Amino acid sequence: MSDVLSDAEIGARHGLSAAAYDGARELRVEELACTRGAALIFDNLSFTVKAGEALLVGGANGSGKSSLLRQLAGLLPVAAGRIEMAFGAPDQTVHYLGHADGLKNALTVGETLAFEAALVGCALPAQISATLGLGARDWQFVGDLSAGQRRRLTLARLIIDPRPLWLLDEPMTALDTQARALVDALAQAHLAQGGMIVAASHEGLAFAQSEIRLGQAMEAGA
Image 1 (spheres, rainbow, N blue to C red):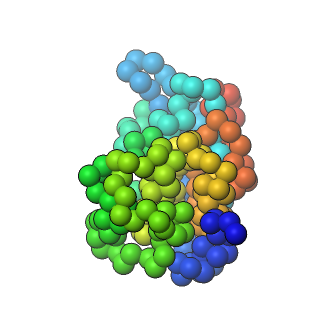
Image 2: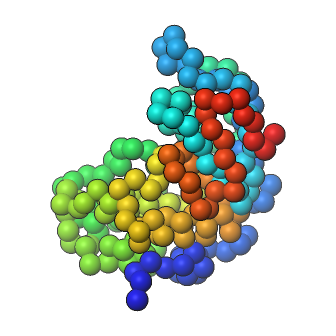
């Protein structure tokens, strides 16, 4: 039997419902520009992501995929244009999972999950370790986990503290087939409840309905 749950099973296990998020929520980006020092990374970028939608951001290395996500997360200044979020401030409504996982090697998996829940004042969902495929590793130190297991552990933040917009930077990196299926199931459950996703990736993502490629004059969803 597979350790990976379907998107429906994940939603049911953690109490996710189709009405979890307000369907009126929307992310709109208009004529956005990004610079690095004096260099222009991209400009005139426009797109809209509505409730239940996922956007894939592609492009070559250095095209600005990670920088775009950091702008959307409020971690990088906007050189020109604007970002409108019709659902609240990023620090309360956005999950940003970048290349750095922010995990503490000296904690166990179980301690990390408890810490993440306490940090946001949320109850730790039942069977979350099993959902992440880490059920037998609650007492293992984070520093002893493989790269793929660490990536699985960071996904806990998406479950523990539900937020409408997920910003995912290369979400499939270092993941095996089962872990990739887990990411897809989590994403599908999130979208089914009216969530939104913007994901930067060098590869296609099954849960994404539309795509833009940086480095090309493209506009999506405007």
